Length: 124
Image (cartoon, rainbow, N blue to C red):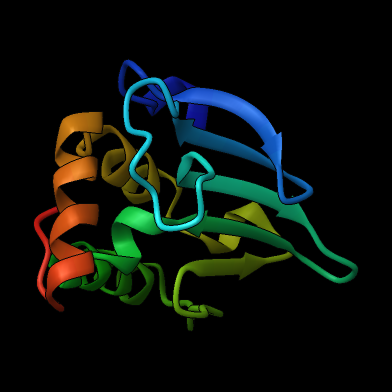
């Protein structure tokens, strides 16, 4: 689902022990920690999988779209600030997640990151 919806430019890597999709440092080296900006990532935890979606974390509108999709699905989301924890893919709104990923091209994600660094509001 991630690869099918990933906009151009993001690169796949293994960072922080997760399968990550990132903005390469060659494109945007000005990160707070000198590491590539993580757009999204998938991690296997002891009792669940975690999908990290930084664009949703940085944008209240996208966050609300995700919450609405869970309501439509009739499932209570198990979410942290930037992660969605799940044990069964049937209990997450796959189509909405794919749409949120595809709706955030790299240039908008970088702009959102820069806005988030300077304020609490962001666009993507």
